[in-house]
Length: 96
Image (cartoon, rainbow, N blue to C red; front, side, top):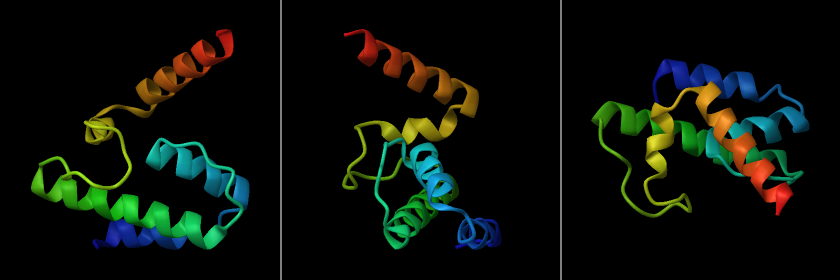
């Protein structure tokens, strides 16, 4: 784990539950209503470490892990693009 990731993890320790849930959604791309701070912190930390390892090797992380196939591509998208995709999917889900 590099210093940047360690600093991010130190910072998220002080976040409130709704902020942790929003960060979980941003980092993992999954919606959660889980009230367990320890679980959220652990999953966010694991995702940040996996992202760090993938960045270091410049290869997509292999299998496992509950994401969608090709989900590693998400790390190459900007936040604005991701938000637009999620908003579009949410609007499509509400329309049907």
